[in-house]
Length: 224
Length: 248
Ligand SMILES: Nc1ncnc2c1ncn2[C@@H]1O[C@H](COP(=O)(O)OP(=O)(O)OP(=O)(O)O)[C@@H](O)[C@H]1O
Ligand SMILES: [Mg+2]
Image (tube, rainbow over all chains, first blue to last red; front, side, top):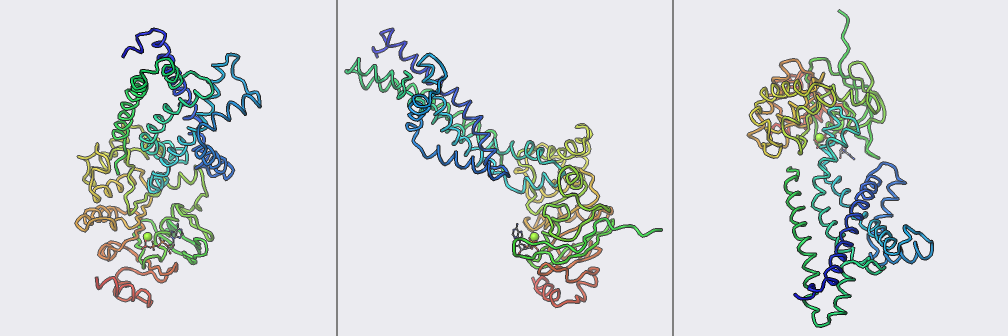
């Protein structure tokens, strides 16, 4: 392929995927933390917290991500003046992270919650019957089993997140799909090779990621 | 000698599940070293009564005392009470993510604050007693039901309990594995362990129980020695129950 023989094209390609990587990593961390908290809310004995968790998940899981990203840009930034940085690209990056994280957190939350629900009640009763305290039961029995059954679903959430980062291109972060669009504009005769290059780059990283999570999930699966 | 207080005192206990009155004014004392078998038709409240002794079920009315003390409502004192009362479940409930050895050492280390080495030594001795010592490093799913249930008994014994509760410990087992679990229970009884057993094993009730308590519809209908109960049940409900069960 001669599209990347041009060093400017080459560096655009690398930059595009670097933004994908930054968006993925930052949003993965933020949505994981947020998702764990939300899952805590959803299984908590306090009705108000359960309500917040439920509303969050219902709202964000059922709204198209593009709308959420637009909301971050046009509402949070343009209307309410939320500003992370004077640098417009950096600012858009963080607005994108906010959108991706609130959205992805709802999926993380549900993965963890179903992990917790997959622990049979008998495991908890046996632990309580031994005289373990509530926190010990949670720490020694529920969470270790819940987290193991969450590994597989977390892999899917991470892969979806990596692909979803391209939507942040709509608010001016020149990530991979925006770079691809630019290259196609410049090299209209090479649409197929350009497409294959970008899709292939995602595939080369995400397919092994999928297998890794599958392997981890099998390795640590709780056999019943 | 002064009369010794019963280890478990169940005193005018009532329990409802919503509208359903599942324990009706139950009064029953279990002496130290005594083996009491709870019998009764399905849904009569046997499990609920057994589970309320370590407060896995809460009662609505009346009082249960263990070793002279009313059951604590919650928190650390409830955990402490539970540590003194071993429980064996129908479905074994071994911790699926822990090895057999870890299952038996978890309680002693985390609750009794035993040193890991001491806990391990005790666990191996208990596993040897129930005949599973060679499988100590396997996971529960790798063992047969009978083996898992014997581990569950070892796990409960590792807490050095003052009493043991059994809720249909052999009902989930293939017939050929029932004997190995009952053997362990018989030897415990012979050692003088205080035991409350819900079971449909009439042979065990006859030969091991000091007393049979018969429940029906949430009521304690009668209690008697097994000899009396099986030969000459006083109530129609018990006669019906025995007629059904003994024709099988
Ligand atoms: N968690 C619960 N919520 C509502 N009702 C319950 C609950 N647990 C038990 N019950 C009801 O309470 C009654 C007594 O149940 P329990 O399990 O104590 O009976 P049992 O004598 O152990 O019966 P079995 O021989 O079938 O085990 C039954 O009618 C049962 O349906
Ligand atoms: Mg029962």
